[in-house]
Structures are given as C-alpha cells and as structure tokens.
Length: 214
Ligand code: SAH
Image (tube, rainbow, N blue to C red; front, side, top):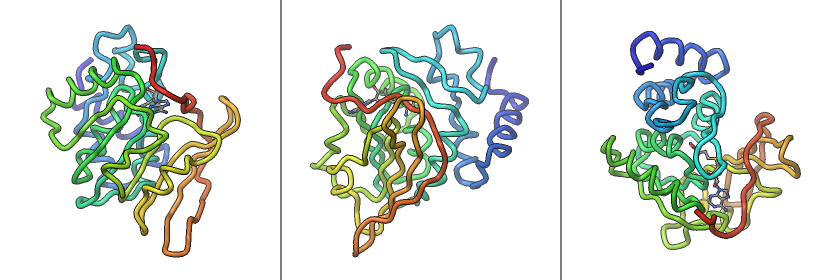
C-alpha cells in the first residue's frame, strides 16, 4: 500500500480520534510516510495501522498515535535543538526534523543507526544527526537541549538527560519499573528545578546500558 490520499486520510483520522490534535504534529505526520521506515519487512503492509511493529535488532517502531502524542507533548518550536534517545527505525526523528531546527538522535545498535541514516538521506532530512552510543548519557558535547524525547523506558529519568535539558526546556519519556506498565512523563525544567507531569500509560522497550551487539 502506498501513502496515497485514502491511506493518509484514514491514518490522520485514527491519530485525531486518539487525541493527536496539534496541527503542526499532524502536518508533519502527514508528510512522513511510516512505510519507508519498515520497507522490506513482512509487516510493511501494516504501516498505517495504529500499532507498534517489529524492526531489526528485536526492537520496535512505536505506535503512530503514541508518536503523535509524544510529539505534541514536547511542544517543539522551529528554533529548537532536540535530542532523541532511541532512534530505532528513525520514524520519530524524521517527524521531529520537520518541526525543529536540529535533531540529534542516539541509538545503541549501529545497524539501526545505519538504516535510519539511509532513510534520512533518501528523504533529504539534512537537519538530523544520528549517533551510535548509549543515549542514557545524553550527548554532552551538543548540550543543552531545548527538548529531549526518550523512546525507551527507564526506571527513573536519567540524571545526565535532566542535566542536559535547558532551563525552560521540556523532556518527554516513559518511566516504569516493569516492561509492561510504564507512565509517559513530561518534565519541565524551570529556574527552580523540575516539574513532573504524568500523561498516560504506555509500553516501550527498556532503556539498556551500553552498546548493542549489531
Ligand atoms: N523512536 C523509534 C522507536 C524506538 S524503540 C522509532 O521511531 O522507530 C526504542 C529504541 O531505543 C530501540 O531501538 C533501542 O535499541 C533503543 N535504546 C534502548 N536503550 C538505549 C540507550 N541506552 N541508548 C540509545 N538507544 C537505546
């Protein structure tokens, strides 16, 4: 199935009905074809269904409505420098790249980074830089960030990421003790410290230490 008018309309309708209402987020998700990020997979035909799908290295491309809700919760503006931890397929980073000035994305599997870079090139998304690294340490040489999004679940917000968030900045991340029940949290950093807000329950793969083997 191609991202034709009919598929696109249904995709956007499903996003809206699940609470993705921000116009800039919806426009970006209309432009980035999710099928590009799972091409060659046996699941490619299900790209426009609202479900997570398997990608290489035993990881997943997130559910579109969750990508949409996290993107709008991040309140990204055109001048922003954004850090994503957990590149995976590159889908979330591609959407962010249409909304922000600069996107840095970090993934612990080199194979996923290579795949995502190839798609960013094909789509001419020149404001994304992808690194193979353990993203729980952030990216100190590029800090501070206006926005940070983490797409793998930690038990607590990693200290280095909090430290690399600019004052006035926002971080959105899943937090939880188990693989099955996690909360999506929005952290706002002010002059006085950090404010935490629980947005909804989610289910993400865990944030792991060190590099992956692939
Ligand atoms: N944002 C992705 C979905 C990613 S799934 C997308 O749009 O497709 C979560 C990803 O986080 C996985 O690819 C996993 O390998 C990665 N990950 C887990 N722990 C990590 C860490 N410490 N540093 C960087 N990436 C990590």
